[in-house]
Image 1: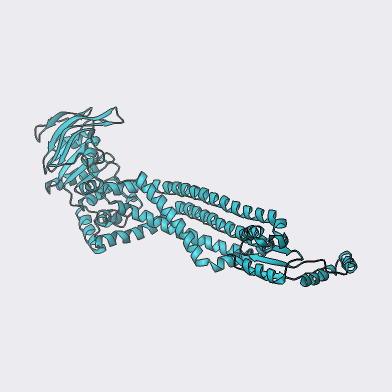
Image 2 (image 1 turned 120 degrees about the vertical axis):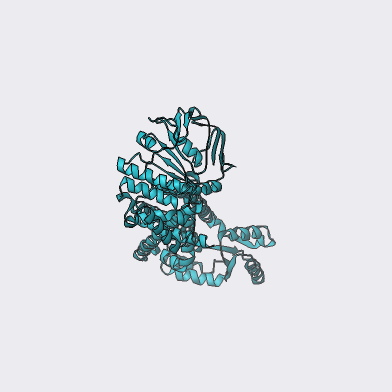
Length: 305
Length: 227
């Protein structure tokens, strides 16, 4: 037990000595860590951006059911209840013929042509309709399918979904494609990260090859040789990540008000603030794991005792 | 203590460094391996300390077959059979004290035990004044003494010395040979590979002459021919 403790203690000390003595290699490793941290955070933001964009588009799309004049208010209420019970439906609002007319009158005040036309008509040309708000656009598809097959089909004049269908479908497809693309990018970035880290660590360790060989000749155990290197990896990853966080926070502060100009609900500053600890924990753990696995592979492959 | 039975080592499938070698080194012996460059002296030492495995034949250490060893057994063996090289193999950026501490750190000794042992050995090898000096600032003779002192900390049974005087002036060479003789008198088996005639002539001990990886002469102490 004492032997393990002493070897561990030596690992911590020798790891920090490597960090200081191999300054140029340490610098390269810190920069690599920094670049990888930026890439990973970039990916997180791309995901966040695609979700924000999807939400933004969806909030601007509505799904309305326009009824024919032969429908009764009881039937409309019944349809409203059925639709409200659909999973994913947030709100179903009834807009009566009168309410719709009032709305149109208000809107037409700024348009003299419509105002004149309404006066000439003298009767209310509009119909009752339901406005549906759902969590995502897939729900609209289900509601529309249901209504078209239901006995209420004959009472429905038209569904505004079909007017927006193309836009909705494009939004869904864009969002899904973006995510698939991002997953692909994540895999490629991970692969490149492993290659970059593996090679940087290999170069770092290669310069210490003689030291490793001497330890091997002295009959040092695998862990005796490996531990300082593994601690060294931990140190430069930690310092690299802390440095990244400093730069990252400055970047977020400086661009705090800029992003909302692109999409109102996209705010990286508050997104990071809300998820600061869990996200940093996952990303840092991921990088450290990547670095340690690379270091371990290098030691196992090229410096086997 | 060390037995070679028809040992052959072929590098890269065609380069025969050691050819059907058989000999025995008894415990406490001082054996010199001589021969021209490429005769196979270093290969013999590397085969003993298990840096390389033989292509054919068997090697025994204290009646234990060590022809092929696991990495764990190899490590254990390297604490009993230490090697001294011409190019010293010291950690140059570390102090003499840190270099001497290494074997004890490998054994997992505490700081206090390390200090005590290092001081004892440093005194024995006249290195006490040099303990805080970086290894790279030492002279060749001093470096070789540090290497020997470092090995002694394992309390080894065998010292393999591969041209230990190769980089040293005559005075320092003499000092190293004297140190090896002293250690041999303490009961440590020494296998010295050299092509230094003066060293061979000076040590009245067993001499094995190698040529093209084969033993051409194996002369007992006192019966060897002066070169």
